[in-house]
Image (cartoon, rainbow, N blue to C red):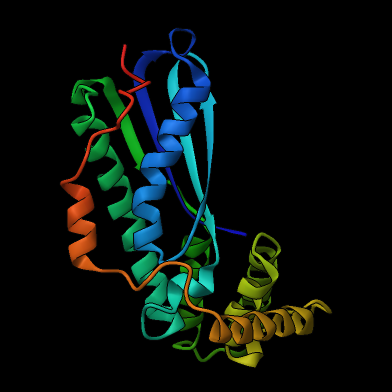
Length: 225
């Protein structure tokens, strides 16, 4: 799976005064509720809690090309996923407050730099490069871009890497023997998706609004003091 989004919260709670298992489950449940709608799939949520006043890193793992499939092109899809990551952060924070966390106890919250951000940076580099005319500059910059693409693919699922590669002009494909494998894995996965129904139905603004105004955490808030 590919890390398609990440958010982080710093709470004014003592790590040793909470039940960490309950806290992790709560964070996973709240994040999943919104991420599954925003990214149109059944995501896997990973939570990392750090000691002191609690810092919670929440990673959303899933299939990038499915999330992008809601939108037009690969390029526009990446932009929307980055915007949706911000909406995820705001939605999860609102849910915390609705469930009893005092807003003052959230010291800091932020969206993390993840794979879609890396891809966006590469696509912008390509756009800027194609405005230049110097052959020497082009050669050096293309080499840098190819290396960035290769490194980014390393941190993606094979099928997501294949989807990314196919969105690019072949001039920017890295000299990497894994490229044909990535592409084949994407094509196989895409054929399977055509056969089966999507894991989550298309994102609905009504459904998302319902979640934003809906139920509190049934068992209480395990992060509360």
